[in-house]
Length: 242
Image (tube, rainbow, N blue to C red; front, top):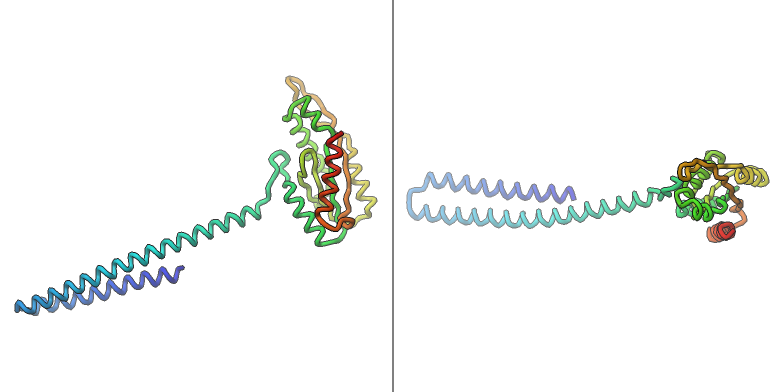
């Protein structure tokens, strides 16, 4: 595109230089001409030169319009591609917890399945969140979820990845080479921790106990991502019904 622009500008300059040279020649001939016939010839040559200049100007105007239209299309296409690229690279973040959402979790789980090795999906489901929402309101339920999210972040390893799964559920992707029994014990310890969330109910501040259920899914036992998500969703649905 830059070369086209350069070529168009060069062409305009060339046409302008050519017409200027021809006009200079006509001017010199005017000074040397005394007869009527000579004046008529110069007039004809002058009109011819001006017509050529008008045609060059019209042609270059059309070329520049076409060039600008192409340039605009390419810029819009590049901006559109950049927007899509940024959108693809930018993770979708859950507003409540600040964690990446289920879509990012599934991508991470799929990558772990492809890599192979000792990886686990640890699911944590907050107990009776629907009852908390019904009795104290959704804003209180949101505060409970935020407190539980902070609890998970503080107890999981910095190398573990944590995501908001769905509803009252969070999933951690654990790439660990420890003994599976040790990892299971660690998950049970996190889930069994006595957590309380301080919430404001009217003019009173009270502590609500926050309990959860958990399940550990070794990715080595699953053949596809669908197998993993089915187990996580089934466990979540079972806990939500309680």
